[in-house]
Image (tube, rainbow, N blue to C red; front, top):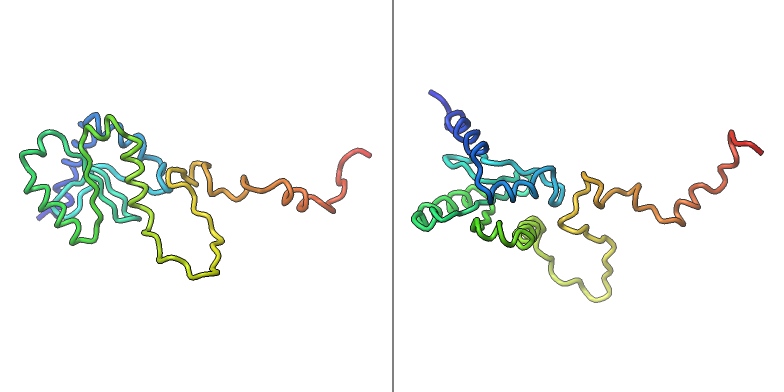
Length: 169
């Protein structure tokens, strides 16, 4: 007997091939680790469902709902409850939201990937670490790369005392 994942796999492949305009637009922004350096997958089987987008690292599921979802509100609610019980955070967007307000959608996704703010710091406490922008990806060279963030003073100090090796005098 085949496992559920094996039976859902051909269906997942078909869904990736026959994506909607909203799925295509969102995928262009999620692929290649563009948000927080996180890897997303499309049409990923989880349990008995195939979710639109999935990030294992953040246990985040993104579902896009088109006009057909108006008739299946209860089914979507059961699906979300199942995913929540399995430990996944589910974000739902209407196709129209993705097509007309992609920046707002991407910001909500980035916000969901950031942990909630801790309790206020005690008086006199200092924060040393600066969080990177949620929409920049270290893997694409858009922040987080220490070599590119070297200050001119640090560079000058690191070159001091090296002498003139191999150059003409």
